[in-house]
Image (cartoon, rainbow over all chains, first blue to last red; front, top):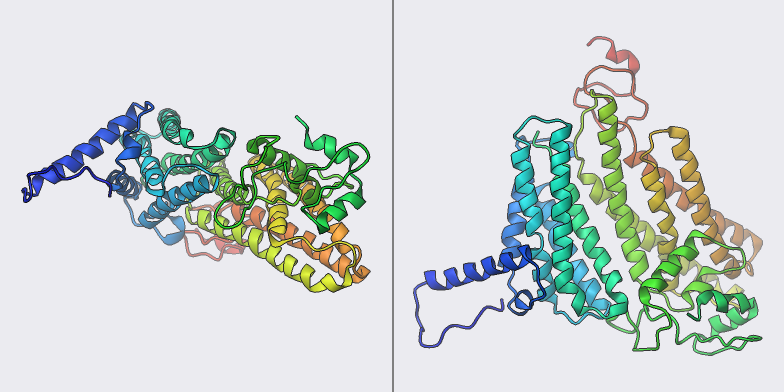
Amino acid sequence: MAEAEESPGDPGTASPRPLMRDLKAVGKKFMHVLYPRKSNTLLRDWDLWGPLILCVTLALMLQRDSVDSEKDGGPQFAEVFVIVWFGAVTITLNSKLLGGNISFFQSLCVLGYCILPLTVAMLICRLVLLADPGPVNFMVRLFVVIVMFAWSIVASTAFLADSQPPNRRALAVYPVFLFYFVISWMILTFTPQ
Amino acid sequence: MASADELTFHEFEEATNLLAETPDAATTSRSDQLTPQGHVAVAVGSGSSYGAEDEVEEESDKAAVLNRIKGSLLPRPGHNFVRHHLRNRPDLYGPFWICATLAFVLAVTGNLTLVLAQRRDPSIHYSPQFHKVTVAGISIYCYAWLVPLALWGFLRWRKGVRERMGPYTFLETVCVYGYSLFVFIPMVVLWLIPVPWLQWLFGALALGLSATGLVFTLWPVVREDTRLVAMVLLSAVVLLHALLAVGCKLYFFQSLPPEKVAPPPQITSLPSNIPLPPTLPQSMAPS
C-alpha cells in the first residue's frame, strides 16, 4: 500500500501510532468522497483499506435476517464481494485499455471509496425498513438511493474523468454508471424478511 | 464531419471486397477516396490496448461506438456490417459492455416483473432471486463468445471453397454478434408490460431485426459456398439466436407459483414453498 513514509527518527514506535495514522488517512479520504472536489489526494496516496471496510459493511448489511433456501435468497456475502471487486477490476481494465493514465490500484481505490454514499444509503434503508412497510416507505428509500447513486457517480467521475483522453470520456464513464447502478439495485431490492 | 455515410454511399461491393483482402490498401472509387486507416481509432491494437496508435480521428470514439450500434439496429441489404461499419477495425468495447448491460438488464427487469406481479396478486411469494444475475451473465457471455468462435472455425474450415472473399477474423465475428445483441436490451425493457401477446410481438420484432443483421453480414461470405451449406449455416445462426431470446423470456419472465392455494399457475419451473407438484391442478384441492 502506498502509505506515507515512516517519520524519520521514530524507528520503533508503538503500534497504535501507525494505526491512528492509517485511520486518519482513511477518514480523510471519506471526507474527500463526501465533498468531491478536484483534488489529488485520493489518487496520490491510494490505499485499499477503505474500500475493504466499505465492501464488508455493505455485504454484511445486505444479509437477510432469516436463512433462506438457496433459490429464495438475496445476494450472499460472497456474491456482493465478487460483484464489487470484480466489477471494480473490470472497470479499471477498461479504462486502462481506453488509454487512461491512471494506475491500476489508484483506480480501484477511487471506485472503492466512492461506494461510501451507497453504504450510507444502505444504512438509511435499513433504518427506514424498521418502520411500517408501504408505498411511502418505498418512496423514501427510492429517493435516498437515487440521491446517493448520483453522488457516487459524481464523486467518481470527478476523480476518474481527468485521466481519460477527451474523446473517450463517455466510454469510460458508462461502465462506472452500470457498476453503481447494480449496487443501487441490490440496495433498493433489499427486504429483511 | 466526413461521415461514414458519405463514404458508404459511394462504395461498391467490389471495392469493399478488395479492401477485405488487403486491409491496408486504399482504394479509390469514383469520387471519394476510401481511407481505411484514418477512421475509427477504437480498435484492437496489438498487445495491450483497445486503442490503436495515435491516428487522426475523424470522429470521436463515442460517436464511433454509437454509429456501430445504429448500424446493427437497422440492417440494410447492401450494407455489410463488417465492411461498412467496422471497416476492418473491430473493437471489443462494444460487445463486452453490451453483453454486461444485457445481463444486468435481464436480471433487473426479471426482478421488477416479479415485484409488479406481486403487487397485483399478493399471494405470490417475492424473493430477490439474486442467483439469476449469475445465470444471466454466464449465459449471455457464453453465447456471445462461444458461438462466434464456432462460426469462425466453421467458416475457416470451408475457406477452401471460396474464391473471392476471405472469412472474417474472429474479432470481427465477435463484434458482429455483440452489436447484434444490442436490440435485445430495449426488447427486455419492453417486456415489463405484462401483456403476453405484446411480449411475444416485441420478441419477434427484435429477433427479426437482430437475425436479419446477422444474415446480411454473413451472406457475402457464405453465398459462394454450396447452397446446402449456406442454408444450413444461416438457419443454424438464426435458430441459435431465437433460442437465446426464447430462453431469456421463459427463464427470467415466468410467473411463480403462488404460496397458498390460488388459481393454477401457468408456467412453473421453480419449486414452490409448499411440497406440491406444481403442474397438477387437482392436487391443490385439499388445502
